[in-house]
Length: 230
Image (cartoon, rainbow, N blue to C red; front, side, top):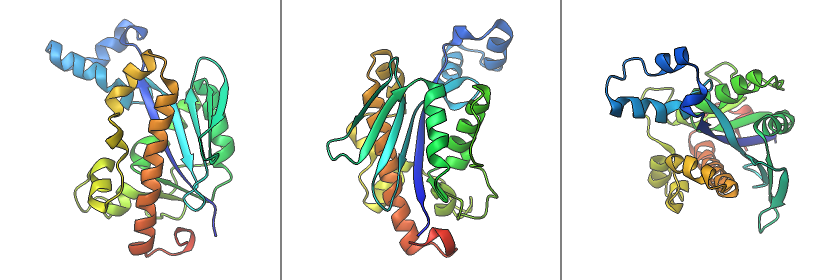
């Protein structure tokens, strides 16, 4: 059986005043009202040049063992109650270095919208921080054997409408990670309060749900064979 890993990231936009005047003008281009300007600032977390990685969760869907790397002002490590998931707090550079060491061991990565967000985000952030990527997370698109992006698979590469992970989970009868009351919009407040472990647990919830969604897809809809099959 190939070694495979589900991963997901959480990001946080940098303070708007950390950008110089030219950058601020560029970021607010077309935002001609205070409301639109605020909306543009809130979207900074979506782009790898205006935000940073604050958590990466990884889970082996065949063993349910995993690791969560999260931003923390001091280095710390702990495990969940079952002893199956390791949590490591460090800075962004440290968590990216640890991520690349771990992900290199796997034959297949599994994501939800990873080709559209997570994979290019961690690759560019790593380059910005002079962290060497250990593998290419963006292999040829139409082959799920190296990178299985479930959003691409469940929409047949954009042939049907895209829904978010919460919607797919509810449709498939999978516990949604959003059911705990935390969403991506909560991350800044949690980070400002120093609730770094809550962010880590939230990120883990996304990969647990994605792993179950992968099992459903792999059992019922995977026609590619090879590394995609259990």
